Image (cartoon, rainbow, N blue to C red; front, side, top):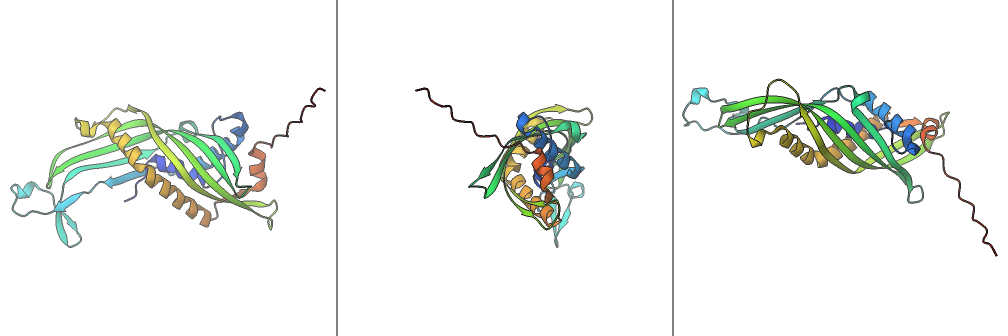
Amino acid sequence: MRRASILIGILVFPLSLPAQEKQPDQEYAAFSKMLHSMAVKQLPKEFEDASAWNQTIPAEPNLRLQKLRTFIKVGDKQEMPHGTWRRFKGKIEEPDKNLKIVVKDFKSMENGKFYRLVLDIDATILCNIEVQQWQKGLLLIGGQGAADANVTAAVTADIAWSFNFKKLPPELNIEPKVMELGLKLVDIKARGGPVLPAGPANDVKELLRGFVKSSEPFVKDLANDAIAKSLKEGKGSISAGALMNVLPKPKAPEKEKKSDK
């Protein structure tokens, strides 16, 4: 099952193309804005993590209350729902307002062999959470809740690039790879409507915090896979002129002051 939350969308798409958003160091303001613009255009409408849904155990024919129990066919066997089922759906409403991308650094590494992009992402995500507690095919309790989650991410990506001089203006081919990321749930605000059943195991904040933490390795892998797919589809290039226009101009070296004799 595909694990994603808006977290994934946020991390994957801004890096598949160099581009735009919020107000970082003024030095990278235009670059951040460009990244944000491209991210918003490619952001999926909704993300889902159902990795903890549909958990089952082998059916036990001699249990009481057989008619009240639920059975699911798995392959050629009958199994019973069991344990805590959880699934998350998320989306960014009004991404122009609720998604912020701030480029912190963009520098040449190893004498221009590749470039390192460091950026911060801040997003407010509408999360819908559904929880069901099963005991050998019996649904004990279930419920759902909605909350606005504020999530931040620190991302480091190494970007190899090359120019295609067969096109005018020259086209810049980008090959990014997410090297590091750190996801953090900053705060949540519950929305009205159905609520989750009471109990520490179903606390909305704890559920989301656990999901965010466990998603880090997966988000990194998914980001790299999505970037590769994007490049194969021809979406991983951008006009060299467009990029050069938003990058900060190189600083002139300071002249050495003559020492007084």
